[in-house]
Amino acid sequence: MPVLTIARLTLRETVRRRLLHAVVILTMAMIGLTTWGFSRLTTLQSNGHPLPRFEVMSSAAILVILIAYMFSFVLAVGAAFLAAPAIASDVESGLVLAVLPRPIRRSDVVLGKWLGLAVMLAAYAALAGAIELATVNLTTGYVPPHAVVAIAFLVGQSLVLLTLALLCSTRLSPMTGGIVALVLFGLAWIAGIAQSFGTAFSNTTIVHAGTAISLLIPSDGLWRGAVYSLEPAAMAAIGSDWSRANPFGVSTAPSSPFLIWAACWIVVVLGIAMLRFGRRDL
Image (cartoon, rainbow, N blue to C red; front, side):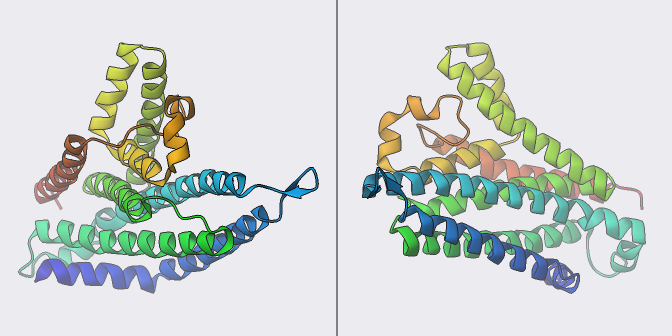
């Protein structure tokens, strides 16, 4: 199928540029440093005595959430700057003019690009997340309550940014499209914090504004699902005290309607990207 062919070529092009090699090396270095940091938790002392196991587990839980935030940012930036030039660069170089005369539709190009990059991002998130959590378990004995679900939420967040940046790529230059996608990602993150403030201080206007932005760009809602999946029961028990206006603490999981909306959002925005590229004058 043309879509699968383009997806395979997209993956091959990414490997040819050695981007994958650089990301793997940097990720392994990052995992090595965090593993060393977690190993030091078990050697910390208080008043000449080793920290109680509960404090070690609590510290590990908080650090895992902070590392997950770092990974979410890496995935978001990677998704934006992989997808932003995916179509725009081919248009600028004239490569797309050599591909489209074949029995390939413009929608096949967009969908193939999205599929190839989505597979790569999902594989990276799953592998890096599994290795990181395995090293945390090996050094401290801590295991998040819903690690697989958290990784799935991080993958979902990256797919939102990937789809948004690909939409920008159908009309904007690579750099402009990447910057627009990241600015919208930051806007959604700030809106999520503002929504937490609104909830904490019973300000319905801020709550409604934050909710509207989270529906327009559901990346922050998916990030909060990842946080909720990583929080141990002790953090969930203190609820609002931990999560009040805190991007690293969530008291409730994303609702099923929101998750359905996020999936539909990706499908709709991807469809708009195919429509806009189909109508573009090359």
